[in-house]
Amino acid sequence: MKNQFVWMGALISLGIIVLGVCLNSGIKAFVQKDRVVSVKGLCEKEVKADHVIWPIQFEEKGDKLNVLLQAVTVKNQEVVDYLISKGIDKDEISISSPNVYDGITDRYSYNPTVRYTVTSVITVSSNKIDLVCELMLKQLDLLNKGITIVNNYYSQPSFTFNGLNDIKPEMIETATKNARAVALKFAEDSGSKLGKIKSASQGTFSISERDSNTPYMKQVRIVTYVDYYLND
Image 1 (cartoon, rainbow, N blue to C red):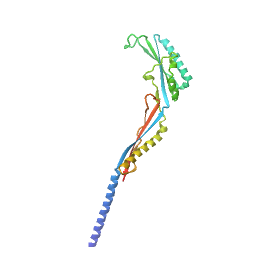
Image 2: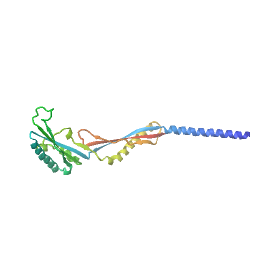
Image 3: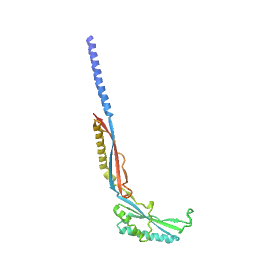
Image 4: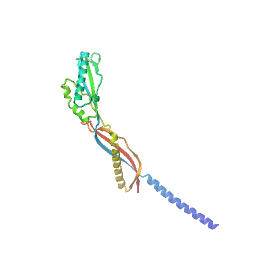
């Protein structure tokens, strides 16, 4: 009976030792799992816009509305003919209905020199970026035809880039590599080894103008967020 108690005690002691070892390993593994470094990976790329919307706005002023509307109709056709002669396709051109302003009926207008101002807008929507930019620099051609071009906020061209899906994979890959390089440096400086990825987020793509002088040049930007485990 005595020997039986001795063996039971020995087994219990062994079980406690094994349990202690397992707990110690588990605690180390738990602590190790919580060692994480969070990094960001940046990738930027300059691209050229692939679509432009260019509103061409001009005005006719006078006191006889029917005469002004006829003049606008004639000049609309002159602008369209000019654009087509320079290489813009007909289906890339649209003409909006003329807007008529009556200075007499406007209570905020005092002693207008002419009663009516008729504004016409002809819009070019095209993928021919270089051609449109060239024509924007040659608006003097239209002025020489007696077409009073108006340059204001509403007549500014709008350039867009629609090829994001084509460059997304390459940019995400570059951003992820940059994030890993930062994590590797952190691990090296801290005397650790870089482990597997715990979590990652692609982030959001942003497209902005490179500068105000060249609105057709765009800056595409992506930031990825990655969490890595650190190992001893």
